[in-house]
Image (cartoon, rainbow, N blue to C red; front, side, top):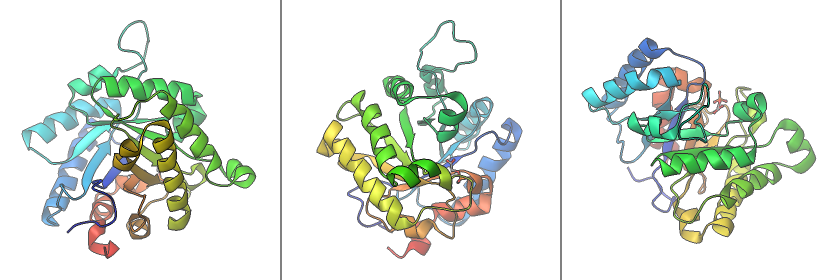
Length: 266
Ligand code: PGA
């Protein structure tokens, strides 16, 4: 079923596992997810599905996906800005590419808040990812305090503006708008608010990169997405998918989110 109003952008449903599921649990989970989507006759060309496990799971996920030819994509939750060298604890984009990762999440609000990541660092990480052939999923979003002081758009627009300065037209990126107050809170943004911010983020891409790049870039919404609220987001013309945290750890729930065309009525 065609998903209307997205100018050819293939929706992406992305599961951010955070610090959950070890490599054995990851194998079982991805197997079950693949079965569930196959049973539901999920069309992966219409809606892409990706999981973002911890680093230590990636090799196992790669082996499973490749052996069973699963149409599920995967990526890491972070990456180093460096290619190699004396950077204890870091993982390079080249190493992720060698594991056939398609994507990498960059600048998640938990990395910003707990690891002091700045827009400048996030921009360098995005460039490192692109150089290695990965698609960075660049996260932006306002805190509750930002929302109160500046409204929903100002902070994510400023964040993406700084990051996009370092990118160039034609770069293959995904942007995730994740209001920090909506993450893990059970309190999602309204679809209308998410659409307003997504439209402004697309304008930032148009101004900093170009119109074609802005039109081609997928903008996801993230923050308390569930099967029960995905439809509202996917009806918005500038929202091209979701970055799902908590609900991505439940096979049935995540599978149902990925099958949004069945309940979105588009
Ligand atoms: P949540 O997390 O779906 O649990 O709110 C989203 C995220 O942090 O990416």
